[in-house]
Length: 248
Image 1: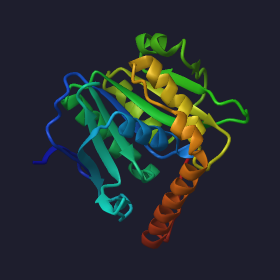
Image 2: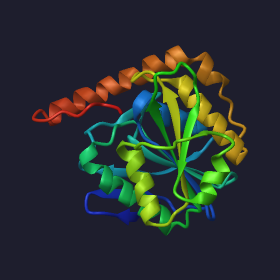
Image 3: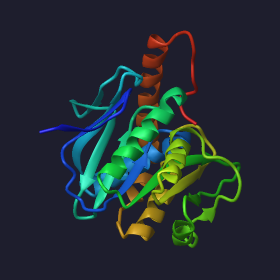
Image 4: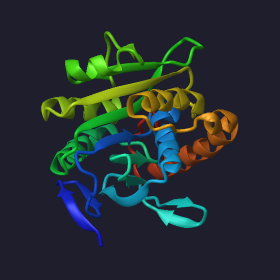
């Protein structure tokens, strides 16, 4: 049975009761290279995570996501009790105008279930051909934890919903880290997602296989690009007076 755990003015988070104690929450929303989305999907599949609920808003594009013929929500929440992990993954971009409300609702709900720390996964545009991960944190302790695994993001900004989530974590005094996979393209980049997953493996002992992401990179790129085009068409049909870039 589903219950409403958190109800903001324009954002509803509806889940079954969370079983994990002091869990880690990882979020992956679409952004540059779809790094957060692709990495999150791989984690969900590899850890065989259980679907427990969704995030809903009247400001989200009016679509349902199909997977092997079954209807699913575009912004979903999963849990793996064994690894004490909650995953939030989205197949739709979050419009900048509602990012604040979504991040506030998400972090508020995370606090209500006793989340220990939050990990935000996203992409970052670079000119280099090297696949690496940039990192940032809300506390000195979290920064020290990731220092050996990432290149510390010394100066700049984290844009979009990921930046909003990190800012809200800072305001709410929730330890959080941002893992930004370097990519040269706006198109889906499974290789950038793979290096982020490798960092998560090191930090949380997940042992998640990334070989499939590398081997099936071209197929994943085509599938994710098709989904992005479907969402873009939906947004253009419902909000013709103003357009936002799809990702990034």
